[in-house]
Image (tube, rainbow, N blue to C red; front, side, top):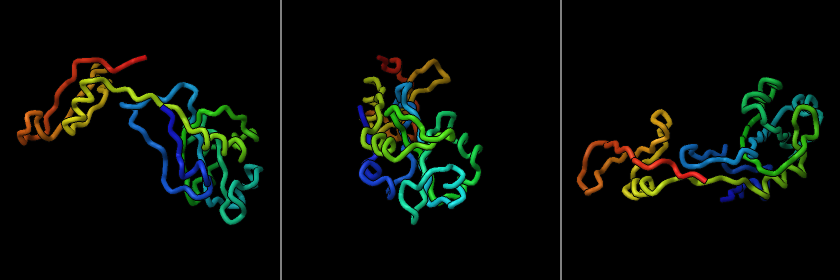
Length: 175
């Protein structure tokens, strides 16, 4: 399925939400998916260091970086980014070419990334669907050979019980 941040797709300069987070136990990203980091209300020093103009004008110095090495790599490279007013991480499937050697993403590529959204695969088996149907919480217990587990407050027969754990026997759905 394809998802996109509509708050950013139509106006990247006024985000309404923070980071995009999907449970890694229920959603898988294709290998081509990358994280990108948007920084808002940055100092003019950050903008001059990155050698790129603001994505949102001079009243809201905003800049976007690819995050190929992980979410802290750009912060280690440019510690002054920690002083920006807001930082959002989003996913991108769109193939882009950074416009600087620091990994800055240009406004045209950013707009395309936000417009196109990103792919995710919803991975859940039927036992887990039953668990969710009884208002349980289902996840992939990687410590036990990818066996899915179901935790729920109420027992399946409707009687109130303390938190109960049930191991689901089927394996996580795969392609």
